[in-house]
Image (tube, rainbow, N blue to C red):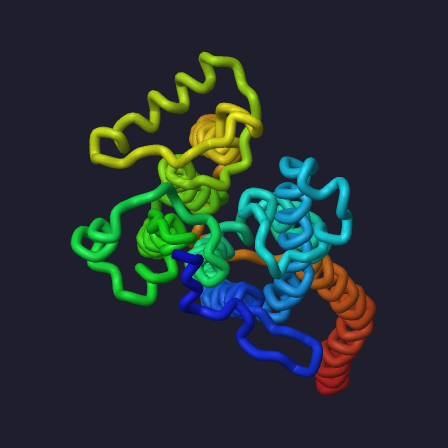
Length: 348
């Protein structure tokens, strides 16, 4: 059986221009994430233009970072045809690369705006996971980022998936794990957790952002091994054994790892990176708590240092004016007080 593409990856065409579902879905993901961030930003009186400008700069930065990350590890596939590097509508972007690009942009942008990066990153965390939750459906339309082979009955009878998902998971006559769906559902659960955590009094600055990384990376570690298109590298045998050992609970649940081409390596990069991120995030939270650097709570007011400086300059100017007026006022007042005394002296 040939590949069954139930969904056409091209949404519509305008002349020679073909608009792909992949791009539309990513755009929708960014928009909904932005709306969620803007809504939370209103609680802290942060102008929505700040987040809109951040998205206008952050989305291109994320796409560039995602593509560079992917191409760097797949260079053998692109070095002889460099034009294909720019064909992102055909897929081939890495979420971790997107995060790296977006974070670099955000650090620079928020600092220029005078905001503390960690405070703003906390507000943006739910929006990020919403973007990933929706964005994964772009992989679904493109028939990519799926897992290893499974029986059709597993998709229909055990997962109870609708026909349009089951049929789209039929690639060249073989049904596959809907890894995109696993990650999308995991992100949805993570969104609920983040929305609950951000209302807790014990949350300090930067911790919601780190919670996002911890949750996403846990899911990515286990889901990544199901995929057959993972970026990989050749690591020492003990590293491969460690990664496989940590993943072994999935084997007990009846899952099998997807095929990993030995030519690419023996360890999936995303799995190893997920472990590193989880450890780094936990250490980050503990160290900042112990050293007292996490003194601000999530619920504390957020004010741009530029706004504070402008207020100080404005207040200083007004104070100077008051100081200039005060002596004159005192003299006038003194004269007003002396006049009654002179009248009384005349009466005496």
